[in-house]
Image (cartoon, rainbow, N blue to C red; front, side, top):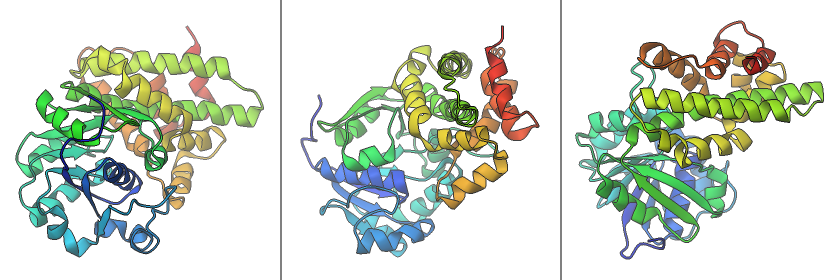
Length: 340
C-alpha cells in the first residue's frame, strides 16, 4: 500500500554525498525519525549542511526534522536505528561499512544505495555489506532515482531487492510516500547487475550525444537503435549472471538506463568523450565538478564479467564502450555497432 509509514521508523543515513542527502531529505519528509551522518569523506559538504541546511550539489534546503551529525558523532547517529542506509559509492562501500560497524555496533537492516561492483573483487554491494556486518538483511536499491529530483520531492519509482521479500518490504514501507513509489523483488542479482550495466549503456548514449553535438547532426535514429541494443545486451548479461530478464525489462534495467541516459553523470561523461576529450581528461573534468563517474569502473567490470561468465555471447555495444574508454578506439567507432 502506498502512503506514509504507519509508525515512525528510526533511520540513519550514513554518508552525506548527494544521493545519501537526497534520500535523507525524502525519508524525513515521509515522516521517519531521520538522521544524516557525514563521514570524514563528506567534510566538503558538512559546513553547508549544518550552516545553510543545504547540500551544495542539491536544490532546496533540508527538512527541519532532519538531524545532521558530524564524523565524531557516529555512535549517537546510529543509536536506536531500525534501518541503516549506506550512502557510499561502490568503491567506498566496504570502508564505510567497517567504519560504521566499529562505531555503531549491530545494524538490524541495511539499505544500499550504491550502483556498482567492488573494485578488484567484482562483488555486488549486498555481498560486500553482508560480509562486513555479519548478516544478510541487506536491501539493494535499483531503478530510476536521480538525486536532485528526489531532493525536490518530485515523483519517483524505485525497486528494492532482498533475498527475503519481507526484508525488502520492511524497508519499502519506510521509503514509500505519495510521490515515492517502491516495488519489491527477491531478484537481488538482477537488480544489482542491472545497476552496473546501465552505467555503461548511459556512457555510450552520451558518446552519441557528443558526436551529434560536434557534427551538428541529431543522430536520433542511431541513438534509439543503440539504446535498444544496449538493453538486449544488458538482458543477456544479467541472465547469464543469475538475474531475471523481467528485472531488466522493469525499473531496475530499462527504467534506470533510460533516466541515466537522459541526464545522469555517466551520460555527461560520455558526451565529453564524444565531443573529443580523451577519456582520462573527461574523467578529470567530471571530478573537478565534484561528480563521481561510477560507469568508468563499471565498463571495466562488465568487460571482465562478460569474459568470465558462461553463456554470454557477443556484446558489441558494451564491448565497444570499453574499447573507447580503455583502448585506442575513437568515439565514432561506437556507431559501427549498428552494422549487421
